[in-house]
Image 1: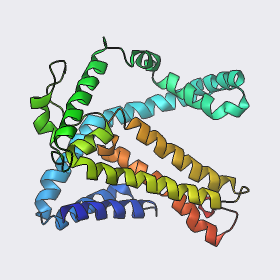
Image 2: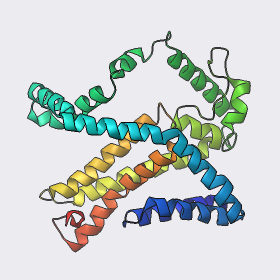
Image 3: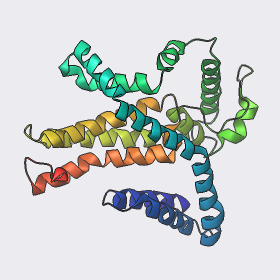
Image 4: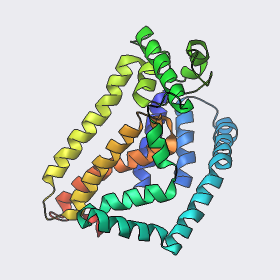
Length: 277
């Protein structure tokens, strides 16, 4: 029942958020709904679990978000990103304008990006060695427990025992790889169910994209952009357990809803996505 409550809470949160409700109100309501289905005491979960976790999240990430917002405003007012994007567009061509903007933003916001790209696969790099150690331990656990896995949240309890000697960290709650994390904790049936989510999404999104008329550029952009964003989310999941990050997963779920919003509007206004009206 607890799992049903979590699914219903997430579904309700996404559905109401797409209709303009504030997430600040929806998140506590969804958490209480999950607790109610799990037959947990609501007041205790509200005061001790939810509020404690929310406070810890704010303490850990609010300074980062604040500095990011200030830095973004500074870059915007100074015209730095625009200048870089203009330069790169002139070099790459107008037909690659989107790529130029993405590259310019990445280089401006993360100066160490090129260094990180060069260090991929470098066994002298501590991060690479640690990730390979997690991969080795995770594959061993998946082979040892193929059907049921070791259970949700089991990695943090088992990893200190199975971590290979070359592992830098002897304790971790996840393996920095979404498919590997799922198959380790939930077995092959869980991995198959997870893959089925994305197969179903891309199949339905492609069907919607084929239905959108070529004249409806906004609708086609929403559907194609949603597919591209979800594909990027899945690729990033090969290097980070982003399926376990609630704030990232909620954004991905909201983006996944866009093709179906476009499909809904097709019946009401053929040839034009009502989302922009």
